[in-house]
Length: 353
Image (cartoon, rainbow, N blue to C red; front, side):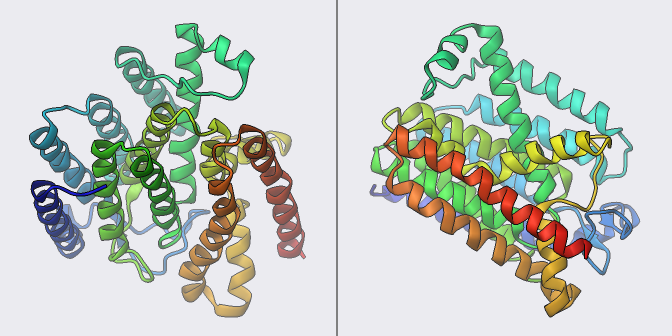
């Protein structure tokens, strides 16, 4: 892939503009409505910061993203309708909590479901490359297809929100995912979509400068919902554009985001807890507790992100080599489940003791 001079120029300007937006947001968001965006609640199960931090990173991210939608239109005369609608809707739903407008978890989930179903139906978003024949037949039905795509979105968006508690944990994970998707699209000549993926990586890395290793800003629920919907759409579109790649490979790529939510949901039901209310027994929290014993609370925040994403990268990297083989990709994906469970229950016993 060779960037045309106009594309390079636009991306260069976009990079500077994105960095400037995050810089301004990190500097001045504390003053908005007497700190309305500050996260001062240290009692939450997933609160690991020691000082009040602004949940305004998502604001800079969504502004940057919408600026790039305009740049994309100027470059290619195309409007990314599905991205514009879904990402902005998800941001608004999450941002309500960031500005302390209380919406119950159930109402928020229902808002997400209706917004996503509307977008999926009217923009004909579907998954057309699946290595499971009987499921592929089911997905020929519009209703089944919409429900399946909806579930994919819900798992990934809520997975993004769930692990967005530690400095850099979510964003580093998404940089890895988007980089792999970029690699696949470049190899297969999907240059226009590759430019969009590069822009997303620029946004993520710009945010990371102000969130890792020490945090000046957080994404907030608005930001994590928006970039969760982004990576879900990226994966669906890359899967559809590259049918020579196994769909199980993309499942492997999204395994951490998906399975963290899926397992948490089942675990809470077994424990007779509400599956939509937070607790402190997720895998990333158990790893954090173990690391805390050696490094203390402050350093453990970012060390935890490094450890988890290093482990994730080691498990995903070999899958890239077999990405076009549906049989090996399938077995690789399912092998991650016992690995996850083995690590989880081992850490659970250790932290309880």
